[in-house]
Length: 321
Ligand SMILES: [Zn+2]
View 1 (cartoon, rainbow, N blue to C red):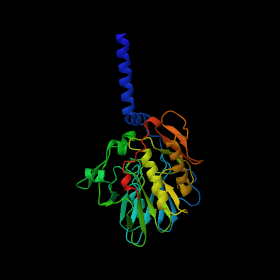
View 2: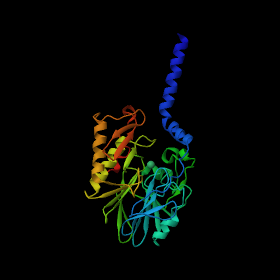
View 3: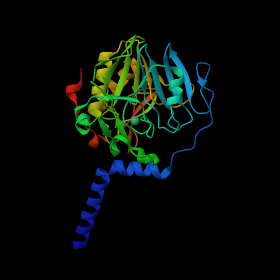
View 4: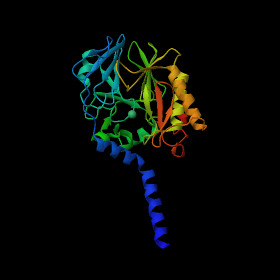
């Protein structure tokens, strides 16, 4: 009897550790597999050209470029938006190759790097940018009194590919909802948490393009990571839907397959919001154990934690517009 009780306590203890340490276990499991080798170049269609043997460029409009890394297994897309005074590089990929010479070849204006969020496949890691702008969130500011922000395990997740979390040297803090002047064109920074606590999107007020990072793209959206939040995701969806015109073209940071940049529409964000509300209400069933895969529509699915681990309280509700 005594042995059985001890065994029960041990099993309960191990289960508790497995739940609280699930994200570290997940990252270690990914790291054990190792990153897949670069894929062979695919046919990217007539709108895209290869810059070299790794990067692709797709002009989306005059002075707006999608920069692809289609051979990297996560198929990252970064965006260069050029104005008369300066340019913004939204994301920089994993730093597997240096994106700066390519960006420099597309503009002679000073370039400000803005990460959509701090995951390792967006911040360029060992690459040091001359100008860095980051969303002005109080908890980030508090950690960077000297404007140097050391990224943390849960924000960066680079351990999955053997990458150390970098320190960002921040030149500009941009408040959620505020405008970024590039001279003759203006961007608006939207705080769109959900995938992570620090996720932002950029709205090009002139062209009607939204650059959404990992908040939304065609394929599996990850809402089960260490600093993901379901309540945050709902807040992000409401912010997008309340901020962008109906005809907005939405460009995400990953795609599933060629050709070209990953593009969605506002209707997909609306579908995401509907799916989130249905999950919260218990009206949408997902498949699988961990993560649970919820259908959003034909092009998008949401990978979340099981219902008993889902957190529906937004962490920064006061930052919603
Ligand atoms: Zn991410």
